[in-house]
Amino acid sequence: MTTDQKMTSRWHSQRTGEEMLMVRWGHFGTPVLVFPTAGGDAEEIERMLMIKVLEPLISGGAVKVYSIDSVAARDWSDQEVSGQSKALLLDGFQQYVRHEVVPAIRNDCDDPDISIVTAGASIGGFNALSMVCRFPDAFSKAICMSGSYDVERFMKNLHGPSPEFHLASPLRFLPGLEDGPLLNTLRTREVVMAHGGGRYEDPEQDWKMAALLGQKGIPNRVDPWGEDYNHDWPTWRAMLPKYLGEL
Image 1 (cartoon, helix red, strand yellow):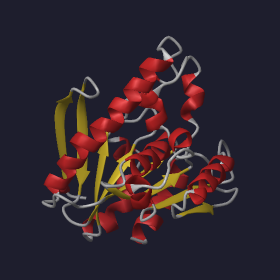
Image 2 (cartoon, one colour):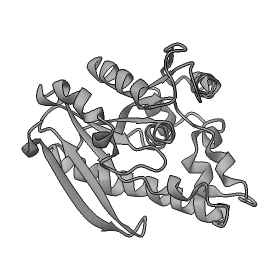
Image 3 (cartoon, helix red, strand yellow):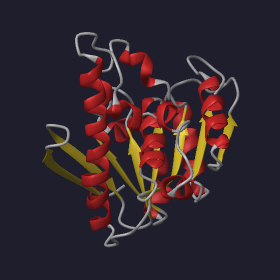
């Protein structure tokens, strides 16, 4: 890929309290926001050769790929950080995506209303799903690979109710979501969940989430890829070009 197809942007976000990086690859096509894994950053998908396997779709003008730094997940394994602080950080990260990243992508696409596809692997799959469920006005489809949706296990020291975590976790807020504008819009969106059957994969997380989405009438499907696919980048490099090609 030529260097003129890659663009980087940085700005300080009050919602995360940090300088944030957004990277774009390509000039035309459906905007796709790819979330990194827990310890990843905006350029992780380039280092892990995901951009290389997506190059035909990018150069062909089918998709424009964006990625951003992972913030909230970096602190989830730190037991010295309180559960409430983690919940606030997660909520702030999601607000940053909706109110800063989405406008930046729409401005880059020269379309103030364009819908964005989300994608991600592992914790990135959680973020991809969460953004579609929480903000379906901005996101049209989630492609979740080997998704880790049960992030409450990282919040073991979360004491008492947390409105921020409730809104940020689909496992928390979807069961109580009643008919209304938000759910009506969600029912026009789509969630794809793919997993392997190899090392470190946890297919039950997909099936549990699919049941919950199905109960609410939200279109979704689960794709098992078999025992030869582990919880690792070779699996995700095989998956994402396929699902983006379906667009």
